[in-house]
Length: 287
Image (cartoon, rainbow, N blue to C red; front, top):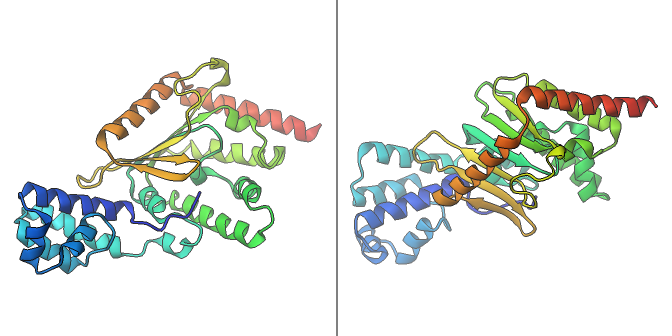
């Protein structure tokens, strides 16, 4: 995953809300900037998330728009939050800040993955095998990225961790990343994870032949209960990460996951299949 250094999800949300409030007040950027005593460029850069406003800047903007108390309080808290350094800041050289922020703040995360076990459920050995495949000659890079990935995973052991609703293609478990021993450990970790009430892992079996979205890539949807936090879809492309916040497009992604979920095995059936595949790897190791 390319490291992202642009605005985070909360920063983009604040910018969009400030722009929406200005338009609702029927004010142009020129008029608003004049009232504030700013240049038009400063206001536009704030509204496009190209510069980070101070809490005082946001207070002054909201004074002009005359927002209600609840909206004002929510946006001022958002302004404070985007300036706070999250745990991921320590891994800024290898970890996408916007992605980590979404993962950390979401109330529920829905994932459809066709290639590998999602990072938040990867064992150290499985993660190392994947990272080493991308950076085969850089031990320091491998170690650094592994530390970041395990830090992400650790966040999901907390009491307020997001709910995980994960759909995985069976091919993921058949692919011997790192070898049979590594896969035995990874499957064991998954079987332990689904014992948690907040984690659901369901498998889409290969026996289907055809499945919804066949040929399309993986997708994640970060869902929020807070009114100012928009649900966001994340898609990996050859050119890097794509974040989708448009409500219609996010709903389309959600519908896609619903169709895949309709053909997935039940949780109990998925556990049975993962157990069977683990036994197959164990037999291979013993042979």
